[in-house]
Image (cartoon, rainbow, N blue to C red; front, side):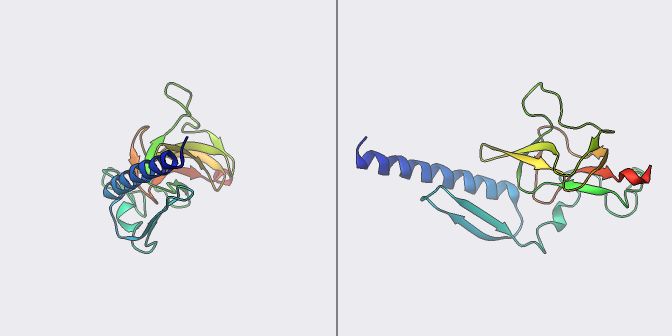
Length: 162
């Protein structure tokens, strides 16, 4: 492979990554504070203002609110529950591959650092792990849903509450 071929492939990859980053930004919305796309080691950095970005995403897209008091549907009180939130924008999957058993179901006990889902972003599968242990009380998003940074994915009830 010639040096020119390497440059052309790098340029093509950079163009593709740039287009995908642009599409990601269109889908993500919110006030982006920084975008960095590098060709060197194919690095993309997108930052949202943490004080502003999570607020409109609290209930997710067409999702009932789980903050504070019960919503219009009369949902149960969720105070005291921990939530697993999306650390990035992408497509949420409950299982490692189509047709496979879900990582967790409502009622399952989750340990800290246990994988509870996957978010696909830019064709990369990102493991989603719980920061805390507990029993899965509710899975808020549906398999295959587009999720946003900071969006609640599931609620965990503390085990000592039983």
